[in-house]
Image (cartoon, rainbow, N blue to C red; front, side):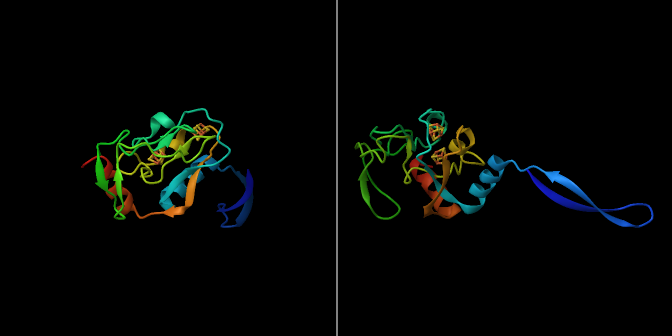
Length: 154
Ligand code: SF4
Ligand code: SF4
């Protein structure tokens, strides 16, 4: 809650100031920031392992700590595939967990929900707001949409 000031005129054209209270919804503000920055999302160590985000991800990019992940999970890609950066991967192969302790997001499967939703669904449902923009994975909308098309063979 912060104090702000508005100006308004009365009938004698006298301008006066009036203090008002402005309340920010920080969750909404954070979602707006996510939309503007176009970054992949990362789960911080504030995660309480509630599991609410996992079923919401349209790309199955979220995994429970210590669980293996695969490109084929929740996508249409199978077998040997070439990623956008030229790397060849086996979509069926189990990959090493990114975290052993908390839920984690695979950056190569996260599209910030582009192609499915207006905002990152993990951030929308997380009760402790620990799904935040990942400064190490800033990507263009085109890159994210291409990934979405690649993952779902569209
Ligand atoms: Fe999945 Fe969307 Fe969260 Fe990325 S932003 S991990 S695609 S729910
Ligand atoms: Fe962790 Fe938030 Fe996902 Fe719950 S919703 S598992 S707290 S990241």
